[in-house]
Image (cartoon, rainbow over all chains, first blue to last red; front, side, top):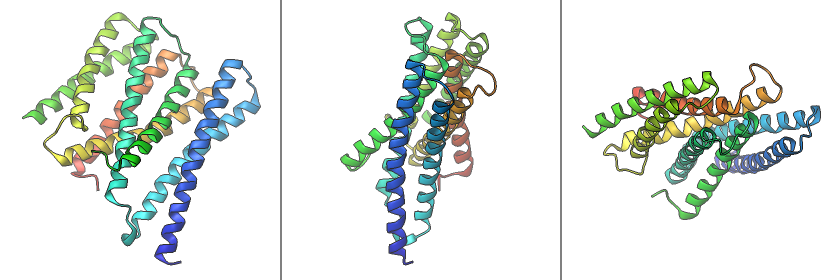
Amino acid sequence: MSDEGRYDDIKRKMRRDNAIFIVILTLSGAAALVEYWLGIGGPVFAMIILFFVAFAVVAIFRMLMADRMLKKIPEYMPDERVMKIDTYARSLSWYVTFCLVCLLVGLTAFHIIDPGAYLTLILIFLVMGYSWLVFKWYYGRKGDVQ
Amino acid sequence: MKGVFLKYALWLGSAFVFVSLAAMFFMDRIDILALVAFAFGMVIVVCTLSRYNQCGSPEDERMRKIAAFSLMNSWVSGVTLMSMLLVLMYFKWGRALSGVQVICLTIILMLATFYGWYLYYSLKGDVE
């Protein structure tokens, strides 16, 4: 396969992985929250959650692998701007999540809320995923991180 | 000089945060003393990190890049470890954790992975 063909193939896979990641994140979050609030437990929901979480991890690894594969074709290196946007989106997402967890400490300390372990973890997981996508979309539309 | 000061401020803040979080984790409640120490440490850590990242204007572009890449890798490690913890908790494998313990563990995890990557890139010299 030519370099151009390989590049298109990798780009297509990356787009597909992005779509899979968003769908899985939404479905796993929704399933987990429904399970938490309605208390519909049982092995079926457990399998659904395991399936979604496992796929989320696989999607992240696949995205990283696709990025590494792109770097192997020198003519089609992703441009500096795109890489910078992704790096800043993830670092700002880290920052947002960190602030959220600190806020949770304060709210829990003053007994304003008392989230269980399960809900806390799901909340953090969802904020990490969505804030990354939002920042990526925002900087992508803006064109640069400056 | 400013960079050296920021570095020591970050270590001091982190020490406060880690000690207070460890206390909260093992006591399984948020003590007022631990909360004050945590808040003090957090203010220092957040201010220093924002300076390192992009909100301030660090003089060294290389260090800014290292900080951004460390945060990014810490994010990836965090998502992976969080999802693993979620599965472990759902199937009740290992010790059952409370909400406070999960919060403490998350902060410790995020800071520890960030510092780990930061040290790795700093010793390496660059992110490439």
